[in-house]
Image (tube, rainbow, N blue to C red; front, side, top):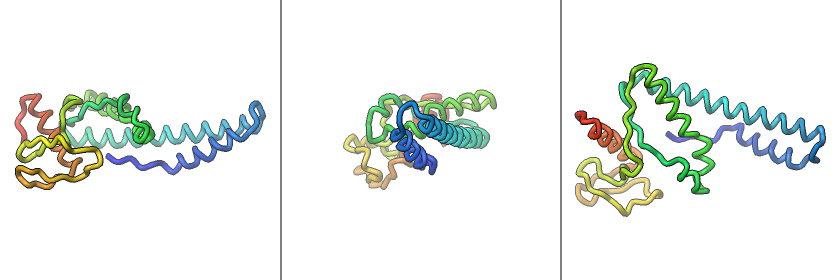
Length: 170
């Protein structure tokens, strides 16, 4: 799921800059801080609302959802991805999915964080260990199938999660 930058985050940057230019302890700085906190709250509410809508839709439409266990703390250490991961707040989205699934009697299936889901061909099972994050598409050298990294990973996550549960893959 690709998350776009909310338009309010641009306002956030602008107001943060304004706060930093004000004299510490002044009334104008306090007013600017209050405006900035309102924008932060609005962005947080938008993110929370979006996550509730998507999680409700996913849970109501599916009997089971397969998730890959991600090391979010480790991923945030990468300075290139940290802002995007934090803005998307993956952990809170997974929490919402889990409690709604439990509430409606649906199943959440998980695979381990060390499963190489994007690197394994979903057709023949070839393990492409040379695949890097920048490779969005790749061709399997064994069966010559062209794979989109995300779609291939989704198919593999489904297979791995169902195998772990001893369920039949359709």
